[in-house]
Image (cartoon, rainbow over all chains, first blue to last red):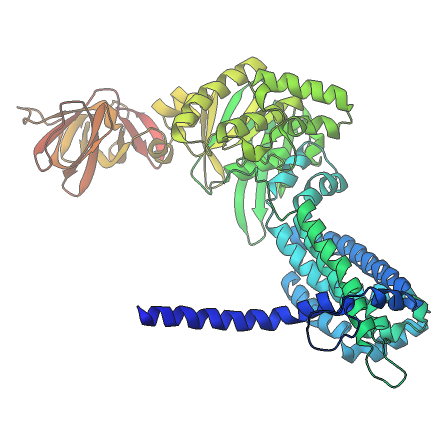
Length: 272
Length: 353
């Protein structure tokens, strides 16, 4: 009996410590922006909205969130459209060496946008006149996300029976009609997953926009966050915490919206 | 009318699913493609639909050669084994889908869908999604969708196999009546001989990519063209016993039977349905025309019993009416009814014996 109780207490303590470990940063994120004198410790704030006012005095803050939104939405759209078409083709057409191709792409994708490829990427972007453009950032980030997106979506497409499409074909539907009427609605949860994942990835990207963009007017949030230091190099914790809160909100809202709207469900209709 | 000539389908890897096959299916006919799994019957159906391209040979529908046409331009409708109802569309939208492809206006196609649905008593279910329907209702929606496209030919892939046993019987009767009313040429695939016999006007029995016999259910049942068909048709498998013709007599499993006149001496296969023999538990006196053996197994079929006799190293099955079943291990004699047995030589039907 006592051993049982001890075990319960031990387990509870362990989980409390782990929970605290993960929740403290979140608590900091919730309290520090409203604290007149934030530090790196979490404490009851000396309540103020002053941090928001001084943050908005920085001319790049709001535009950086707009830039993040633009780059994330652009990359997500590009990745979803291209990955859906590629995954559909790869899933339905027999190509010799298809699986090997996918694995090589997946392997290379971590190299393409990785730190190792930054110099050639910069060189390439310079020659294509894509330095300091949103398009340059979008193309680079999309290129890195595409292989994994294709890989995941192909799995989704493999999981949907071909008889849906064949049925539509017998009724005379064209390939594009089949894609629009049947395949896309069926893999919509997969597309939503890819879109959310792409947005989250781009939202957090620092290195590529940092290197490819010169003009702070075009920099996304991740890069602007890096500029919130005093001239002496000390972090402005009031600005950093406030900006972090603003910066994380859109992603949270997106998650909630997507899971409400699309939910990850499947209706059935194939008799198994 | 559907006419197939010299149709061959070879899959990559060299598997011949269909092997130079010729077949004519008449207008308005309810036609069954029957065979064990892997015999090529589904591939044949898909080739008629245009979902598979034949390696060689031609497919004709209604007098035109459609071999090179895509499925959508062959004027056929197919009901898939899994029904393939679009899960994200409600029943109305599903039934109206073929009309949507034909660019019929929304109002017209919804009216048409409602009309077709009421014919199949689906009117209450129009707003439901496929996942909210029972198996039988899903099947009717799939049929309604096929009917709504007003095709020249219906193709059904195992139409009843996804229903539970009791519903299957109901659906079978329903399907047969529907086909009569619509009078549209219908080809269906099944591995269930009972289904083929019950539904079809004519049956093609397939084995290993070839058609072994085409005929009415009665022809196929009573005069199977070869031992394969004989063993495949019938709810209890036919007894196929090695036999020989010697000097005007037929020797089978220890019994001596009269031999039809025009059969030369030599080895034969003797085929007898378990239903066409009578079992007695007392030795026949002065007669040699019954198979004798020990009762090895008795299987209850409900209104009858299937008795397996062990005669030497041969097994002979006999259907015995209720109440007459012997005890396991007892000696018994099975006498074939005259004129009911079939004789095969070199896999070809010679004549009834």
